[in-house]
Image (cartoon, rainbow, N blue to C red; front, top):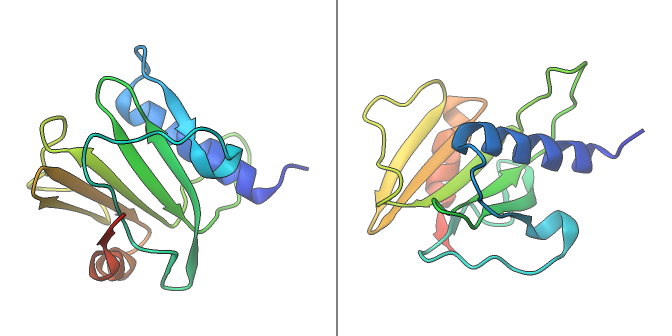
Length: 138
């Protein structure tokens, strides 16, 4: 049986890949693999080491043509082949590559901080607002 952390990180990376496409982008999961750090050309934002009782589980970065980084909080348990989404993810993008949506879907919040677009995906509006309140530059 796979460890839930590995499943979460794998599913999160797969979800990010589905959102952005693969092209020739380079993927790095700095927390799970403990590998080489992927430096972003903009300020990264996270919600700190934990938010609303959910611990930071992984930092997943795409260092390709449209670089972004996602901070994954909490775990989920996949049932079957459908996978699952972690309870909270805070993504940082270059404003040049992703503009904030005027009508985000579901429990998403899109913010702009200077040259950075922050996208928060959460399993509830309350959790998304708590993540906004905890945002800090890395």
